[in-house]
Length: 139
Image 1 (cartoon, rainbow, N blue to C red):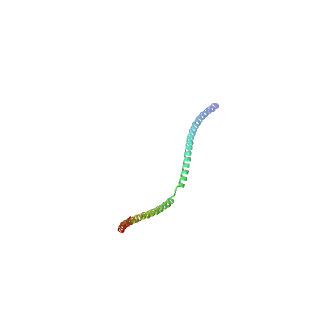
Image 2: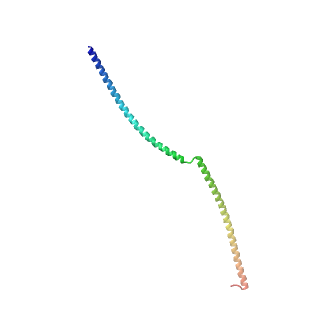
Image 3: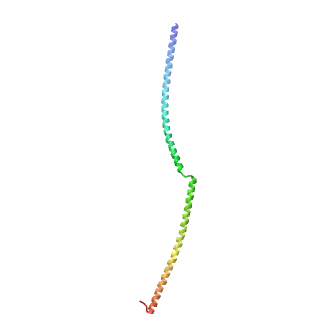
């Protein structure tokens, strides 16, 4: 009887071991699933890391470009310099325009004087020819 009890207990223990072994198999299957999920997560991390490397290089490139851009203060100084140069050119152009008008008026006066002198010269030539004719010096 004792042996029967021991065998019964051993059989119960064997059944429990089978149940425990089955639970371990299920846990192992879950570990396999979890391991597969970790592999997928690792692959995503690799992709994210590659994208982060690309973004880092783009940020560095943009930083270098920003270093080459002018600041607002530098731009304002350049703009003031250009405005001063433009003002100087406009002043020169206005002066030249005024001088042009004065020169045109002076040329009109000179041309009028030349025309007046031509008339006087013509009149003098006519008078000179009459005098020559009266003196009979005409050629």
